[in-house]
Amino acid sequence: MTMVVDRQEIAAALRLRRDMVVLAALLLLAAGIRLWWLDQPLIDAFSWRQASTAMIAENIPVNGWNIFFPEVNWTGPGPSYQGREFQIYTLIVALVQAVTGMTDAAGRLVSTLFGLLTLFSLHRITAMIWTTAHAHAAGLAYALMPAAVMIDTSFLPDATMLALLTLGVFLYLRYAAGGSDRMLVLAAAAFGLGVLAKLPGLGVGLVIAYLAGLLYLRGDRRRLLRSLAAMVIVLAFIIAYYAWAIHLGNSYPPYHVAGSGYIWDEGLRAFMANGFFLDRTWKIAQVWFYGWPILILVGIGLWLHPRPADVLGDRALIWCPLLWLVAAATVYLLAAGEVSANPWNMHIFSVPLAIFAGHGALVLVRLARPAPAVVAGMRMAGLVALIAIFATLPLVQSMKAPFSRKAHALGLELAALRAEGDLVIAVSPDVGDPIAIFYAGARGWVFPPGGGSEPWSIFRADDAAAIADLEQLRAEGARWFGFTTDARDDLGRLFTEHHAGFITWLDAQFERAADTADYVIFRL
Image 1 (cartoon, rainbow, N blue to C red):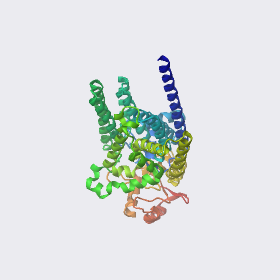
Image 2: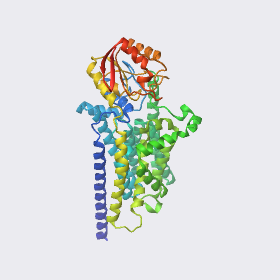
Image 3: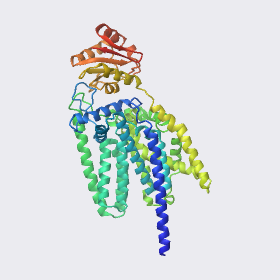
Image 4: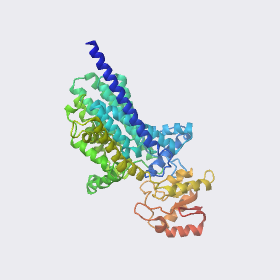
């Protein structure tokens, strides 16, 4: 009997070692894909949000490492505090920058490390609720998913949010399965920080609530009460911080609280009239975020959802990925305008979609069983090749295209021309994008200046209004005005055409300090 037990323990240890080797290989694969983009300037599809995030990171040490006053540089001489998420991501980036001096690469590196943490926690969650084979397949899907690659390599807090949420769910699963109270504390801290990092993460609380409900149904009163106490404490911190963020954003010019396009802002009728923006979101899913190979695998995985008999562990946990998907869909329905306009907010979908895509891949690999291991391996290799060739490589390349290349060049030229303390005005290809100001290393304004109810991304109605804006900014200290030759607003109007009269006025009043095919700069 002892020999049999010993053999079972040895076999279990060997399986665990093999699984850890596979997990390590997945982490290396994901890291290799993501680190490829480490040194790219912030000129890709997400340049607007990345520029603001990078400015906040740079201002943290300047403001005495106070992360409760996130500040950008594109609304004048300041202070330019804004109501934003809790700055755990930018704080870590600022600490890295203090040591390494990196700027763009530091932000991308921190996001990549959090992305690897997401993959680790996702793998362990899937192994606990389904099987290790599902865990390997889900980890592979996440490693290759274009959306995950893009966000895990962007100067954005979203990778931090998802990593902490996924870690929190994993730790709470372990606590609910008999872990110590310390596991609960760690789970609550990770989940709470994840929601503070980005508020949409609160939706994943549905999975935590389900796990707590299982404790109730199984009569585990002690763990249930302690879980509820932890939830109340975490929610209190979340409510307190976001109340502060709203107050801060409404107290300082330009009176900006990040985020818009929520159902309570625009109304249910407006959302329904726009079909909850599903046409725009579906297009993003097809041509940017996932691609057809992954979408097909997700469809197969959902249609042929694992049965309780197919899993090895607690069969009640089999529904966790579906609940996570429902939670993400609920967040989308409440914030469809915001999510569809700023697709990095879709990152909350990445975990359940990776799990279902992995299951879909296993379904295809196991067709016409029994299949020899060599045949199954060849099938999986074929699927990986299809995903890489028709999803990962072309879609990530598309998102990473240098959309703001001219703004980058404009910013670098402004940095060379300006004197210390000079305020600049810059018009980027995507009007309202502050990326040129970021690379100018200065404070200043986007143009039009926007703020409050005034939009940043739509040109003034006529040249007279633009002239009035510029004269006001000159009175506030603006010394340079630059625009890229491809600057276009949200209505599709080209700056050089819509404001041709304004440019003529600039030529009559000021000197052109730089005039290239990419940008023009006036010395005010």
